[in-house]
Image (tube, rainbow, N blue to C red; front, side, top):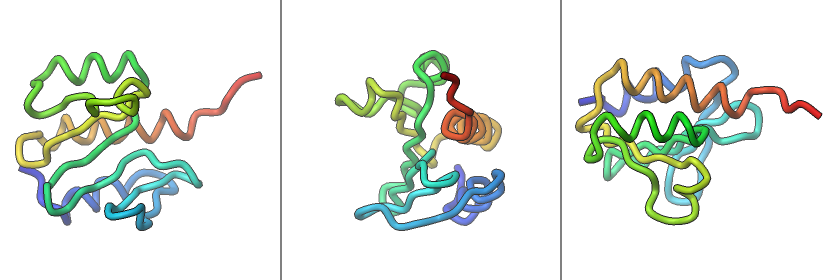
Length: 107
């Protein structure tokens, strides 16, 4: 189980990460782009992953990590249950989500 303070520390420990309100949730951003949101009452994080990464993470445990069940999920938004996830898996998912929103676009 990941506590809410531990989650915040992990998310804010990524380069340039900031915390801001986002509707009824808390968002963590790199620049202006959200890489994860936090639903504190439900102890759920929602990370933005590239499709291939989402597929891999969701194979770990479908009760712990699963796509958002709508069009957002098809865009890579992935739920993580903080009551079930390990610190190492969460850290990896946060790093992948952060890297995806901070990657330079070519073209």
